[in-house]
Length: 400
Image (cartoon, rainbow, N blue to C red):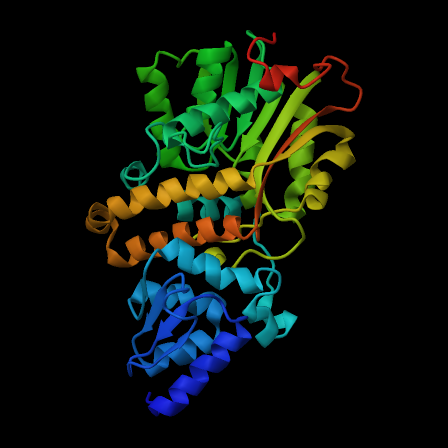
């Protein structure tokens, strides 16, 4: 495909106008440039050819990532800052929504029992060695809790796990069920530091194997049981039910099912916590992220999450939004990923490495411009009076 230089430049300017004039600069294969002045631009996007420009214009939400992965778009400057500026003018209504009717944009989320397992494994079974290159030493792949912005990623992840435990008001000897346990760090932390017994489930075989190995190494195998199963298959009862980073994969149609699982497993005095990426208002996740990285993922609104609690007469006790903490968490991940990118490419290949670099940078940008949020919701049975009188147990280190 060819475009005369003058036409290509006009085409580019129209595209930037439709995108809300983001504070970025674009350089075409012809050498022509448009966009924000270089001194004010968050970065410069280099377009390799006419076909790439046309694809970008026809489907920006999908093609920006795909063309970057192919190497036909390159960004000079900080990739996360560039994407933040691209998202900022159209954070409320994306360019894709302006160009196509709703029927062509939306599709049902497939999160039935078999599909949910397939979706999760697509993302998490890339390989433990891959994640170990850029996560913290405990392999925690959820939002950290930065008690100060200067905290390290390791400190923030330990602080997050402790924050969760204190919100649950865990007591020695209690039983905990964890739905979607990742590599097991939270389950091990709860057992070691709070004296509880944990049954934790996950559909990723690689993660479960890693978690079991860590339990053996730490001498906690008699207090923590890791099982490879879907949350809908959970059995037994517990004093505390916790899920960190799983709800994004469940899908709103299945929230009542999760509520029923909690209802049948949570004891009368039980407490629970769900930690999830979410939305301030209902809308689908970015199409590129859904199709290339997180199949069928859905960040819920608080209203959607109530379909877990309300049908089962579960009372919400506390809601906290940690959006800014996730911006910082993702920035740490991206910096570590970029520092290890050569090793990542050797391990998984150039295409997958560029996919994940774009995804992590996009995560930083999405939380920075608040297109997505991070919710922690604490709940219990509606008539439970065996809960703390105040929040002192969460924030006062001397509180019992």
